[in-house]
Amino acid sequence: MTNPEADAQLHWVLSQSNVPVALRLGKGTKLQVKVPFAPDNRVWLQGGKRTSPKWFGY
Image (cartoon, rainbow, N blue to C red; front, side):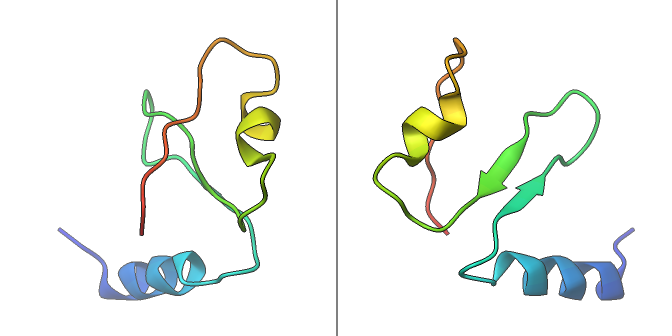
């Protein structure tokens, strides 16, 4: 069952272009982050950890 108000709010949050967003879709899922573009985003997001960020387009 979906909640139209929650879906609309999520769409609004993800449509922001200058505001970083961190989202976890449930227990056991990886954290998803949407950040404004910067050349050093990959290094900053990885933060010296083993897991490398995976990129996907919106």
